[in-house]
Length: 450
Ligand code: ASP
Ligand code: MG
Image 1 (cartoon, helix red, strand yellow):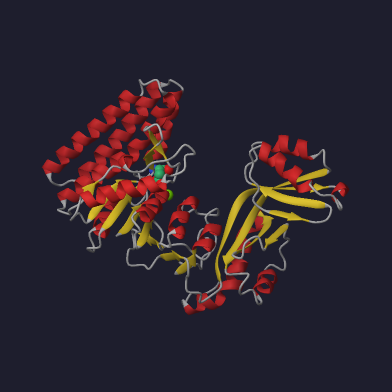
Image 2 (cartoon, rainbow, N blue to C red; image 1 turned 180 degrees about the vertical axis):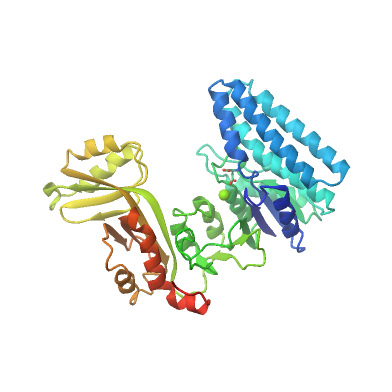
């Protein structure tokens, strides 16, 4: 059994849905297909539920109408068989009528979740219908019947597994199951979700639950790249990368995978293959526990909008408990710290959420002087750095000899070296590192460095 997950862009239009159907039916391997909502739909549903929460029914209805029209257009292109087109029309009017009637419900929290769930309910039913029209034999199973979260809002892995195993054994002979990403039920039995972008997580949880041989995540790029293609011309897709290295990258740049989604796959040793729906022949990137290591630096990524805070205090000298007090301030203000470096008399750390920064700096100033620096970017180099660092750190810093570096973090994990630079120098840094670290690999791939 394999799991295939298609993201919002992959199912984002009738033409793309046709491509997805080709991929699903291209081989006989038994599979569970996890689908996101069509791109843009969940955002529209969030708007609808915001209008609903503000009791602005007029705008909520308008937004529903716009969404309805979009779907009506898509099904016209998708179904060339009248009988199936009629079925699709009935399906749309049922779901959109239901969406309307939700606006008159009183249980706000629950209703919001039900509104958000409609995107995946729509995409899966439309695609199941399309597969039927195309004579591709498949069965739609509702994620609401097996995907459960516990009181801590964590997936109930055992229950999910026994539910799914039960469904599969009751449906012997079915080769293709289709289901929704993102949506689930909570302990009250109410409709809930795994948070935005959660379809990847669904795929990985399902993979673990049925002990799949592989989880394939189909997206709109040919895998994870060695550097950010938005800022660097000569990038290539990484053939293999470890779960640890991929997890270091999940926080950065173009988020290809939901950060949490790798854990169930890693724990169960199920390889995750990131593939491109629009170029299914391309190899993609295999994320696994033991990737082949033909080179040791896998990828470079950047994250903007970073703020650095430096706390300097001579009271820190030879004192204990100082860091604890600093961390408590961030904890109290619900702000997570990303990078941290210390010296005998100062601590520098970075945050990406500045919502409570005034309160934080105010409280920190009771310990010493506080300096805040913004418009910074974290550059992350991911790879098997600690094991194979002969010359690597020298290459990195030689490449950046003319760039002022604000902070360096190395040794936190074996797979990451991060540093902080001014955002205005980010593009230059990414390009310099590409040249310094990947010129040999790029040559073998016949890419010319400019
Ligand atoms: N449709 C949901 C979202 O847009 C879940 C997903 O696509 O992963 O967040
Ligand atoms: Mg996604």
